[in-house]
Length: 189
Image (tube, rainbow, N blue to C red):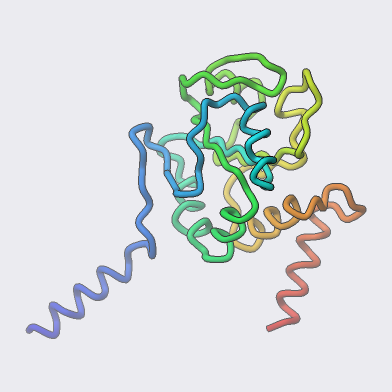
């Protein structure tokens, strides 16, 4: 009888996600690598550059099953976590949030208005920015890459690596880079 209880407990625990995911008061997933800022994207970019990191904005929403998938299955992966922590300065915006955000062109608005302005229709939506954004340019026009929706570990890691290494300046578009990485990983096994 005792053994049956131990096995039942072990089975129940193994069915839980490997890492507990914290939800904030806004219903969004929170991680240690997300930054709390005054949400002036121009200032956030300056701070990212000062730390030698790439600036990344994640737009999410309460109850998003795809956001949950990313936070439970992809972001906890040690290599993904290490890449984000080492190379990215990340802020999170709420698709329906009311906090004031200042876009790169100096226009202040609520998170939900910024999301609408940037044509964010899916969550999570991750946008990556260059080290310098010309004056007067909106964020969606300045982004060097956008990851709309949930992706698996490999695609996410490849996107992070491609952006970190400024692959968008080269001749190899992300899809070709990703295909090459898939082939290299397969050959290594």
